[in-house]
Amino acid sequence: MKTMFYRGKYVDSADAREMGFKRQRLMDQGSSYFGAPGPSYIYDAPPPLPPAYSYVPPPFPVVRLRGLPFDCAEAEIVDFFHGLDVIDVLFVHKGGKFTGEAYCVLGYPLQIDFALQRNRRNIGRRYVEVFRSRKEEYYNAIANEVSDAPGSSPRRGAPRARSMDERDLSEFKGVLRLRGLPFSATKDDIINFFKDFVLSEDKVHLIANSEGRPAGESFVEFKSPEESKAAMSKDRMTLGYRYIELFPASREELEEAASRGR
Image (cartoon, rainbow, N blue to C red; front, side, top):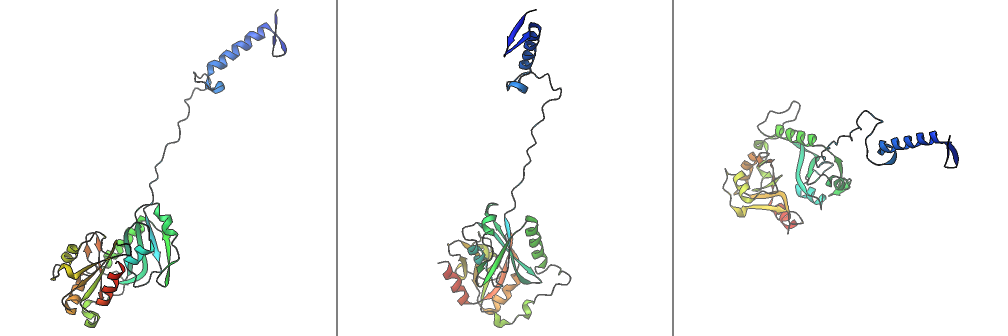
């Protein structure tokens, strides 16, 4: 019987042939041993599929603010989030009174983290807390505001807001401040909002923020204090997709607000 020298050992020629057959089988088995594609004789089952890709939608870009001054204006919220795209500001009321809270919708989900960095910064003399929020909370707040609006059924236990007839005429100076306007609102939109009253464009003053962008506010001059009081019947009615808050104001307040955007 012949012998062969194989890797430092003498082996029988039959063993050598068997080793050759084994190596050939390994080469035929392909990638399991040598990284090359080839038919597999080891596994009967097909290779496992890669995990399915699951899409996670980005969060709705809304934050909640707490601790706002009770005379806070939408323009102050926009200034507070300077450098971010403020799409909407919803002030929260309970029983017709401002709670010091608001929801702010931003332009992009990535801006949420930048908004949270403003936490505990000041608006006026008050520091403001900024929290993450959700789309459901924002829409629930809208629904609550609508249910609190004039003409809707009052919620049980909510104190009744003072009616226009109960407000002293001395509060009215012939000027109303509008808050919560869509940023795209025009003077014609406001004149149409007060379509029951005679207004001209020069009596409607759209307010801009320090960057010259719309602040969501306006001042409107009426012919008399009595007419401005009557116009308060439009308080918290909608203009476009936004409900509008109305406040008695003075010409001094009008001039001060107008000067901020110059």
